[in-house]
Length: 208
Image 1 (cartoon, rainbow, N blue to C red):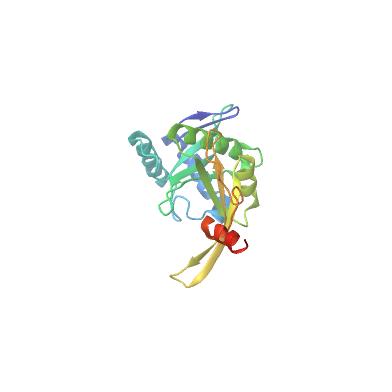
Image 2 (cartoon, one colour):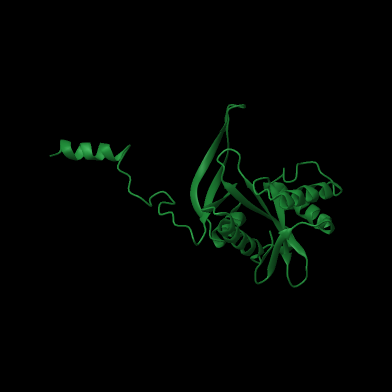
């Protein structure tokens, strides 16, 4: 997939992007909030294997497996960051993420790329919406989500049954594409009358 915006090109990674991908992986903010991005212990040389894997998914027409796309500045050809994307195995929703090199943050690149990708992917593949999840302690990522058209769906708390404890909370966002025809998208979009409509009707009969 290749997408062009006013300032950016979102495209598959190429082998010559290995240094840029490693800069993204080792950026302090990425390490803080996504320490397992491209696995925890990887070297610069490992970037070539990841790029080959991403390219194979593209060539095979695989739109489900996890991969990254480069966010390139059109004016200079520099890679400023990346979008990550996959179909989640548990809920089968398509999930989007972003990681930026620190020198390029605060310029709106991530939100510009995310908005364009979400709209294009949903339109081309008949998907109603994309999701984004993030740590509640990452306000910068939340601003990117909201600026690119994602809306907070709910705050979630994960319970780890293996360790018998609650994990960190996270935010779950959705962005419906402009051509989506679904009417009920978020909590409150339709009235709630209890467990079922029949319960409401029964209540009206009891008051008659």
